[in-house]
Length: 262
Image 1 (cartoon, rainbow, N blue to C red):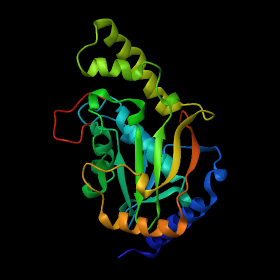
Image 2 (tube, one colour):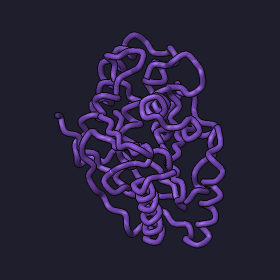
Image 3 (cartoon, helix red, strand yellow):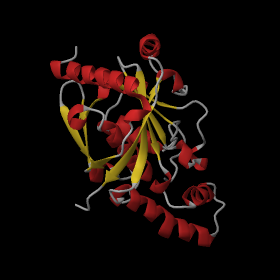
């Protein structure tokens, strides 16, 4: 049974979805996201998560996990669609093309999302061969006719990042390439996810109809799809894109494989 606060969250999502569906692309505008906090409502309590606390590897506590950092920033981007930036966890299902351990560790192990509400896109890339296009997250809301798509933009990662990452992951990198990956490309990506200047956009945030959400490797709850399809008959299909600028102050494989380096 949802509390009054929980019902208020869901109502706000529905109203926001309606407004954005009607508004269409004319409502797109750039705006700034600040800080290192994500707030989650779990149906009972309000829980705050800090970027600097969650960003570490589980197997290597002194190593920053790029994949968890990416997932956190994507969720942080989504949070600005809610009053007070509070995400009602139990009313949101997550689908991603990022197939390392990082998203699963963040959303399931750290933030306690239900396993049924976290899925990988069907046919997603092998984690060794990820590209920028795989850095996409779909957030599907209960009782909402739309989903939110959060997509990483090119400025988030340095040039050659994914080329060298694949060489490193597949064991094809030379000694010089390994050094370049470890000492230049990876540290730059960590820096970007932590301290990227506020004027540079990190993600696209787009409202899409549910039929545009790709299928999951494990299907999302059927009630979400049925409800969304019915609502779209009344609201029509519209898209709205927003550039998200993330200003940060200075203050991963889902299947049971051996963990890969992020």
